[in-house]
Length: 318
Image (cartoon, rainbow, N blue to C red):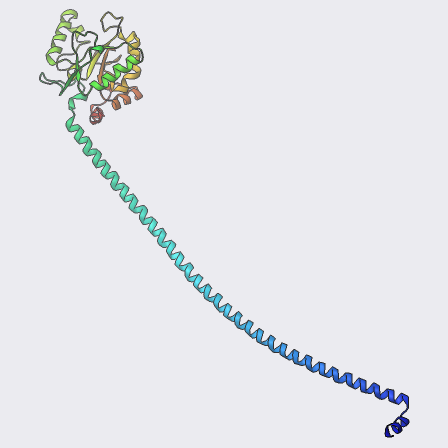
């Protein structure tokens, strides 16, 4: 009854307005409710962001501290490394100095050892072997080489007469004769060692035949002959009728000029020497080193000072 009365009092537009107001009020209420929810979420997010930011800042601070610590450690390591490098460099220099000292000591020991070896060789080597005889030094009648060896008969021009050579020279002479034979050169020994008395007899015979003046031009007096040393040989080849003269025109002499130094032999009396006539057949053993030096410098044995020659005495049989 009451509703009907109320409905009668309200007309249709008024009712519609009321409904609209109610709907709007509901919408507004819903909107506020949503705003409250959003505000709450925003507050939570803001709180989370603040917490995350604080954690980030804390982490950043920790990281910065760690970086600083690492930098300090790196700086310390760099200093340690630099010090280590300096120590290494110092150690290297010390090693080089020690090596230099050791090398110097080794050289000194080597020089001492070499000097001792040289003195030992000199003490065992006949000092007469490199003396200048030929009217300069004299060998007395009692001098003979320490040992003599027979020259192989195949290398003698006259097999019926044995020839002797210093035993330490024989290996070199044997090699020389063998090398000449291998090169197709006919080379023989006509005369080698002569004693004091034998040289005296040879000189006397030449004096009878040629006269004293002429004989002295090509034959030494006893005591001045290189043959008495046992290191000298007169060479000959075929085609000369058994004579020494003309040897310089033969292939054998040319071979000797080019090769004798390799075996320690030198031509004692070349052309123009002041002692005797040119004797292309007369060769003396002086050692490979001295003979090679003379060959290389185009010098003769008697051109050198005796003191310079004596330096090769210890090496004569090397």
